[in-house]
Amino acid sequence: MTKSLSKVNAASLKVLYTLQLLFERDLSMQDLIKYYELYHNEFHSNFVMSKYINTCRYCGIDIKKVNNKYTIVNFPICGVFTPGEISLFQELKNCCEKMRLQNLTEKMGEFVTKIVKRAERPINPVATSVIKDSKIKNFEKACLLSQKVKIFFNDKTSYSCDPIDISIKEDRLSLIIFDGKNSKELSPDNIEQIKILPQKTKNVFLPMTAVYELKGKLAKKYQIREHEQILKIHSNGDLVIANKLEDKTKLLHRLMRYGENCEVVSPKNLVEEMKSLIDETLKNYS
Image (tube, rainbow, N blue to C red):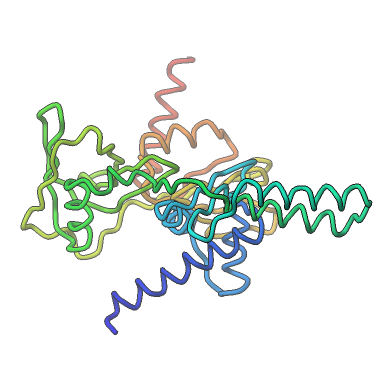
């Protein structure tokens, strides 16, 4: 078995494990990451976990985020139940409630919830029509071959760049590219054509990784975002965060809002840009 094929098989198993976890209960992103750490001794970033969830969505499994937890709303890939059968299950649950069988009522409630998720509904894969588009296929192929692409936009502009990945968030698909300075997310709706170029991308693509420390109350309440992972937790609860692929300008403006509770650690050029941004802002109030 080739190394690449082995990685594909490992990723496939992790997608199935993620699906198994969500069948058992609704889980937040951090809950999912903790289960992987606990039972597989592996740490995955939000970005990787999102890929597993989005793979399930692409297969037609309706997973939504409700109250900050991922829940399976519809799982149509199975034997289906008629409305009458679902009604019968609900009546059984009502009977348990009337008989005041508390433990059985709770179990029946969980059972009915799982049955409803398997009810007969149409499969609606995420952005299927977009994913089948030739330009998306070209982009995906370029990612696999590590070759540069030239993107032609609807406004007749174009430029060459390094393809990084395809991101699927809910029902929105984005192409992540590196333009030589920053990573960007592009909407396929704004693209007319993608051409694969003969030039290779860098052998090892290392997008800028921003490292910053969050302190005090901010660290305790902070919700880890996509492209972020925790590098270190200090004894006082402060967090050291690594962030990849987020647009630099958006990131700096977001971190500025955190005030003294946030300190940019590296890289050096980002620290300098943060200082300049703060100085420029202070000038407006001097």
